[in-house]
Amino acid sequence: MANFVDELRWRGMLHDMVPGTDELLANGGVTGYIGFDPTADSLGIGNMVQVMILTHFQRTGNKPIALVGGATGMVGDPSGKSAERNLLDADTLNHNLECQRKQLEKFLDFEGENAASIVNNYDWFKEFGLLEFIRDVGKHIPVNYMMAKDSVKSRLDSGMSFTEFTYQLIQGYDFYHLWKHNGCKIQMGGSDQWGNITTGTELIRRMEGGDAYALTTPLIKKADGTKFGKTEGGNIWLDPKRTSPYRFYQFLLNTADADVGNYLRVFSIKGKDEIEAIEAEHAEGPHMRTAQKALAAELTARVHSNEDLEKALNASEVLFGKATSESLKSLDEATILDVFEGVPQAKVSRDKVSGGIDIVELLSAETGFLASNGEARRALKENSISVNKAKVGDGYATSTDDLIDGKYLLLQRGKKNYFLVITE
Image 1 (tube, rainbow, N blue to C red):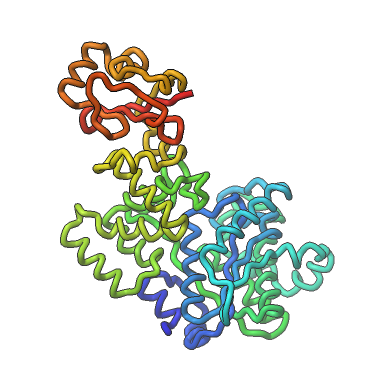
Image 2 (image 1 turned 180 degrees about the vertical axis):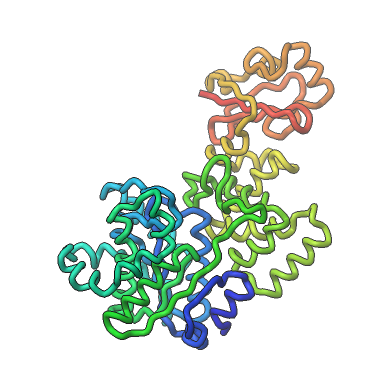
């Protein structure tokens, strides 16, 4: 079985660790955790870095714990933030926690000797009074120790509330609680979490004289220095209602050549030899985008499903390949709207379509796709008109069977001129 630290090293996923961590993890059998911040009702693709850390942790014979921050989510982590965040109400927080819990359950194995578990820190904080906390926990960590943390120092000029200042103590106590009650020896996270994690190791040492360990991963950025997982349209989410599988697939497919090798190592569960073989094949013909296709296919299938991957591939073929009428009709409404975002559109009565609209009328008067009946007839004579990717001629009329997802028709002139008809 592979060594966890060695696995992270070759994947470029190791940023820092406290002395002794390598020896602790040499033979597996260690319990460790990562915390997830419930600020949204979905994890983003950036969170997949930490999901993969837990995945590799379990695959190398260790026991992973995913902590969802029902308590810490009420406070707000100041790490990497230039201003204080708005606090969430209890209903929103609980909704977010439950959604993230369901997502995490897709990636870890909850059975067997190294079964994963998901915990909520609200369970041990809900009965913890303020006076009890500052007496039993707060007295162990000096203020000058807390002030030296980067998450605090970076905010001294702009200001930081007492709420955010205490965050590192609360996260530190999470580690102490899991160390004492769950046998948890190590906390892991992104490099921006180093200060919070080491507050936990310090708290364990000062409160119980115990040994605990810390390991962090690099923050994933693009080769140009911009943040991974962000687009002009916002975050790339794991929830298909927020980011469709098609858009998720396209985001990864559009990875720059300079980034794709790094992303394969970070997000793939493929081994070193297989990834290097993909990279070698990619280098022989970068225009084929072999590495990007491998990355997008694997991650779309794991985050969503094989069926969603198939739909994403079909959808990609619509604009960029040789999609068939059958593959087009397999798409659902969300994917259709994603694929044809920005394509000219018109609304037409569903009853008219079902009753049969002559193709010339549909192309011109009903939709305005073509300027006139004469232009429509010329295009039909040239055999350049398709309905739902199938060539049609003069005399063709629509029917209910033409509707994609019971609502849409795709008109096309030539290879690149598309028009979406929406029936209502």
